Image 1 (cartoon, rainbow, N blue to C red):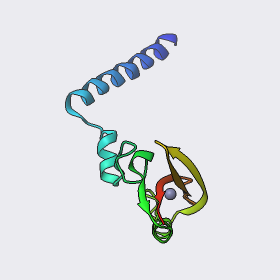
Image 2: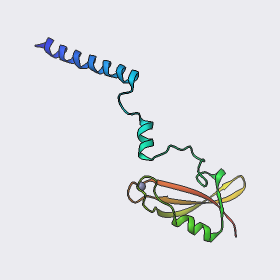
Image 3: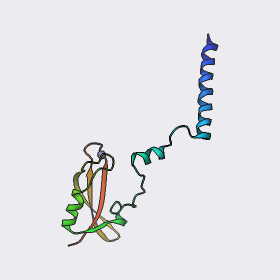
Image 4: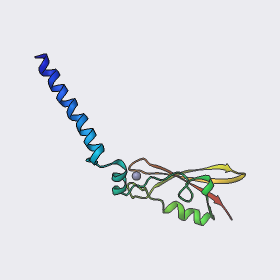
Amino acid sequence: MIWTVIGTFGIVVATIIVGMFADRRWTLLPRKEDLLLASGIRSQLPGQVEGEAPATAITASIGEIERIRRKQRCPRCDIPLDSAANQTVTHEGAELSVLQFTCARCGGIRSIYVREVP
Ligand SMILES: [Zn+2]
């Protein structure tokens, strides 16, 4: 009886190990990067997109800031983002506004750094 259990367990473990080696050798399962690429989600480093980091802050007037605020969409759900309260930060001696957005569907958060000009 015990050898039936141990034998079954051994077969399962051996199958998993053979499967892992086969997947490494011939790539049987899709890789995470391929799935992300296929779904349209691109992995981006912070600061690559204009306004997403203090160093790449967008210079804008109050009217342009309103336009930026209105056109924000969730990259995952493709629905307009809800605007949250602004924050102010100081970066290299300059005061920057941080426009904050949340997605009502997935809860995603986005911050856009803006250097306000008259
Ligand atoms: Zn979303």
